[in-house]
Image (tube, rainbow, N blue to C red):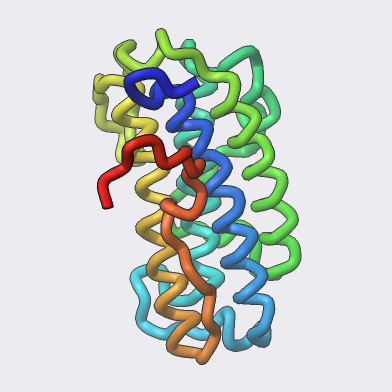
Amino acid sequence: MWGKGMARQQQYALMGRYNRDMNQRLYAAAANLSEDQLADNVGAFFQSIVGTLNHLYVADIMWLQRFAKRQFAAAGCLAEIAVMASPTSLNQVIYEDFDDLLRARRALDAQICQWSEALTEDCFDQPFVYKNSKGHDFCKPFGLVLQHFFNHQTHHRGQVTTLLSQQGVDVGVTDLLLWIEELPLYGAAE
């Protein structure tokens, strides 16, 4: 399975699972706060916890819709996302109600996992042409854009983790390392 190194497809499938699990952990921690605490403008880049969680949802939809329009839809795994209403801005609050946002996040994460598991190794070096939210054209290797997709989620979850910590809520360990398979200790250095 691992050979000389983990295949990129396996890495991105791992990132899909990590993303799903960390979102579940983050939302479970956030559920300890009141609706007012979640919506309170605390001066974060996207104002509040709910604002930041909505940004993550919006950005994911934007990227996945871009992927779905190209050859990176992986056997139609993004069909439902492709037909969703497109967000209008990166700070759009689609779900003010936390429970509605949680349900939407769970459904989206399930699709991200299915999609990342279905990607094939040959797609990662393919050029990916897209327009950003300001309408500027770009052409970048798909695999590196996908790396950004997952890194962006991690970045903003870190912000939410800080906002929760400031409210006295501990999310626990968030390191990707915990999601990486343990290998036998054959000749490992001590």
